[in-house]
Image 1 (cartoon, rainbow, N blue to C red):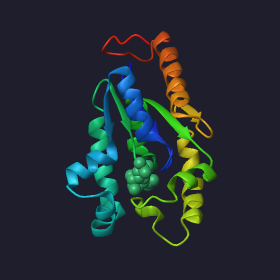
Image 2: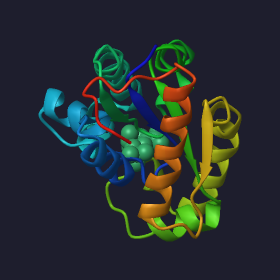
Image 3: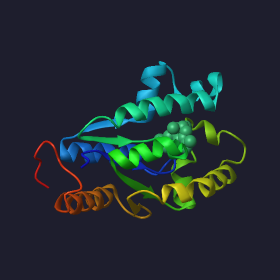
Length: 183
Ligand code: S3P
């Protein structure tokens, strides 16, 4: 039985914001894989991409997430591309309740258009780039245990939907809250 919640989804899906809120509400630890990577590498994600390249970033992402998922009682927000590593995604699926925060490309673009820390979107056609990447990733995201459509939903509503999923999983003996928080 798992005690971790793993949030997956495209850049701009709200994984970190929602993850933080959820962890606070449930008194669980919150871990953000991108933050942890920056701590380990002692530099920003943008710098890692620029100086060492995406492949090196992916190796750090694999290392960090495969360590974080060994925790118990954590909310883990992943970088948008982590699920493209099959071995890593399988590990996340086996050790966590994996929730996909889904949104349309229009919503994602609206949330990301002023972002300056997403190296994959640095080119001169970020929307085209987003469409291309999302098309490749969508079938993987859909392998999550649950999908939540986030368009036009506020944070409270999204957190509420996740809490409902957790409650169902506790009842079905598939999830345990280690700290006895009452939901
Ligand atoms: C990436 C998403 C980013 C970060 C890196 C690569 C991706 O995280 O890991 O820039 O491949 O989609 P967010 O999804 O938190 O923006």
